[in-house]
Image (cartoon, rainbow, N blue to C red; front, top):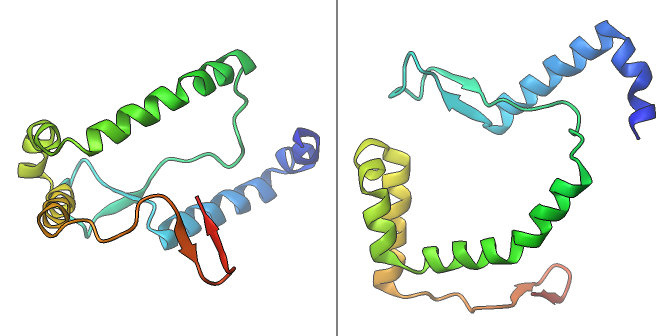
Length: 132
């Protein structure tokens, strides 16, 4: 696939056009960050950094990532189910970041009301299948 990019990478005008389209798409899709100059304002934002093309990753590092994936997933799952740990860990962020505070309020509301969604399979009625 890298060979198919060769001509694109050599055409500076086409590359600039592609970069501008990617920035416009990032803005349209909400891939945004607040700026350091206006950290409390949602009116002044910039797009989040991204790459136009995939980055090569050494196969040994990719294998290491695969090797720890299950353990990492189990850790994230355990943390997500420990309300006291989450509240303690996120307490300073919740005080300063409205978005995180709102998400945590939703989390507390779900805990209060109980989880209504079935665990495991979800119904994908469009396809008539269940995915696990």
